[in-house]
Every structure is written in structure tokens, then in C-alpha cells.
Image (cartoon, rainbow, N blue to C red):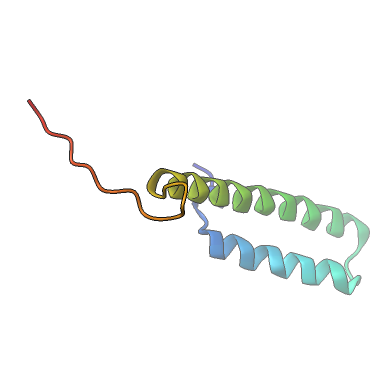
Length: 77
């Protein structure tokens, strides 16, 4: 597993916000800006993946009314 995939959502967002700040300042040389932009895109994908996974978990535990589904215990034979 790569180090970037080990980031929490919050860590990835923090790094992404820093990248946005750097690029908005406009004081970064072109080649470095491209590299930073690519890293930002990778971080964006990580964040999107983590949000999609969280959404899927919520779908599994919430019903159509947004309420928790009743917990069901599977009985073993």
C-alpha cells in the first residue's frame, strides 16, 4: 500500500488545501506548479475514494428515511 493511501481523509484534505494555497499565490515556478498540481489531483482522488467508501457505509446502515436500520443478529445453526 502506498503512503498516500494510508492518509486519513483529514490529512489528505489538509495537504490539498496547502497545495491550493501555493498555487493561488502564483509564486511557484511552472515546472514545480505542474508537479504540485499532479499531487493535488492524486490527493483529490484519495479524498473522493474515502468519501465514496463512507457514503457506501452509510447506505448500508441507514434506511430510506435516513434512520438507522435495525441491527440484526444472524443466528448460527
